[in-house]
Length: 84
Image (cartoon, rainbow, N blue to C red):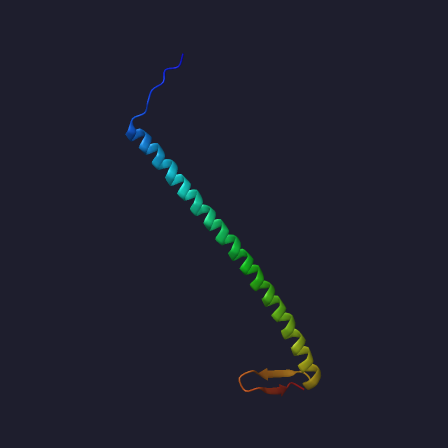
C-alpha cells in the first residue's frame, strides 16, 4: 500500500504561489494575444483604406489629365504646368 505523506505548509504555499503566478502569466499572454489580434484587424483596415485612397487618387489624376492634358501639378500653389 502507498504511504501518504502530508506536505508542509511552506511547500504547499510554494506550490500554490507557483500555480497562481502561472495563471496570471497565462492571463497576461491571453490579453497580449487579444491586443495583437485587434492590432492586426486595425492594420488590415488601414491598409485597405490606403488602397482605396490610391484608387481615388488615380481616378482624380485621370480626370485632371483628361481636362488639362499631360503635365505636373504643384499642390502647394494649385498651378498646373503643361508638359506639351
